[in-house]
Length: 395
Image (cartoon, rainbow, N blue to C red):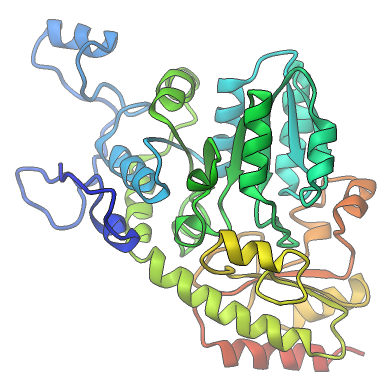
């Protein structure tokens, strides 16, 4: 296995960290499609199962391809250890089940993915874990929500779909005062644009399905943190409960990581151009993009991010207008994914946040006229022309 220097650049780490070559000396990482691994003796098998000897046992919790992905992503995030999971939601579930118990309390930003709301509210709530949802941009709201039994703060920044931005360093300080963990969903930015651990966060969550893959091919997730937290808390949950990333998916994500830096730069450049154009359009009521000076947290995003990302949301008059635009676009796929090479358009109120109550959507600011764009790798002028014709066709 190649040793890497933490001072290496991110793009170099994305190509080399965790690399393991077999005796065949392959250039592309090997894909280990094996459910189990053999032992040289009964004694070695016993030692591997007992954990007194390192090595592969069973692909539910030890697989070389998955391990390379884990080590590479941990290096890119500046973390000590990573556990890869079957999806982004299973990453959040794995962390929560690993560090929370009945009677514990969690503070979660109100502006998170709709399924994340349901996980904390409806799933974890059944196991005696209570959650308070707060305005992620209000430091006072976070402080007021803290309780004696608060064990974790969870934030998605920038948020889905309004791209609101939370002050990670301030939340980290608040969490430390409480003796709680701060977990940051870094899906929108990836380590290319934001490194929450260097800002004081304890844990980074990823849906590898999105930008880490970059082409909409596979499902996966990841939890990145300290060696102690991951080894003692999260890894045992993965081993026993089995929300495991498949070796094939890990191999696909490894290929995605190699191009992540240049892709995120292109996504950000094109999204900035699209956002600026939408912001000047007469039929657009409002544009949500951290790169715009009109964005409420623009200055904060400039300080803690190295770019503004590829997600742009904008508002038109109502649902009828939003659906008309969505149905008229030619080069935007109508799907609920994001971070793809191909641009995507989504109506959050009826898809990603469709199972959240109307009252909750109102609190989040997710209105019927809101449209979310995931800007892909196409030429920005072509995407703008497509949006132009769709907006022009509004009755």
